[in-house]
Amino acid sequence: MTTSNGSSPLDVEIGALQGGPADLSQYAGKAVLVVNVASKCGLTPQYTGLEKLHEQYAGRGFSVLGVPCNQFLGQEPGSADEIAEFCSATYGVTFPMTEKVEVNGEGRHPLYDRLTGFADAEGHSGDIRWNFEKFLIGRDGQVVARFSPQTEPDAAEVVAAIEAQLA
Image (tube, rainbow, N blue to C red; front, side, top):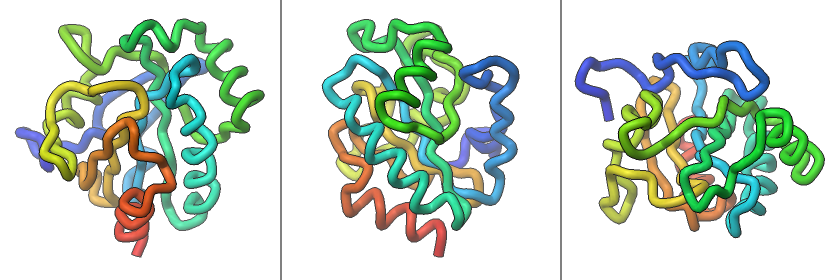
């Protein structure tokens, strides 16, 4: 999906979790799995699979990008330091994380403005349904796949989509 002005979701400005800009332009030419994450969700154990994907494919031009969000039952209430400590200590997360943002509603971050128009395999587009919804951005900077929150990071369709971008 190309946005109306032809630009990539990676062209937006967003802060890094620990402050300063996240500089999404560093992912130009790479495949990126953007995931809205939360520390106190039933799906939080997906951090394990996300980290495994990140480690497995990082050398081939791939990164996971975690985007903390507290819009779903307040399941990401922590400060930036608390989120970073939880992810590192509990799940050994090494992939980059952005500042905490809103993914739905009037306060939706521009990154999610550019992602949510893309439909998943079941045809769902629009608002994020829950924590751990996943968007794969291809090497060309455009969204190439969307996966539901319940789709595990190591699901065959996720792995196949990533590998297709790295081929």
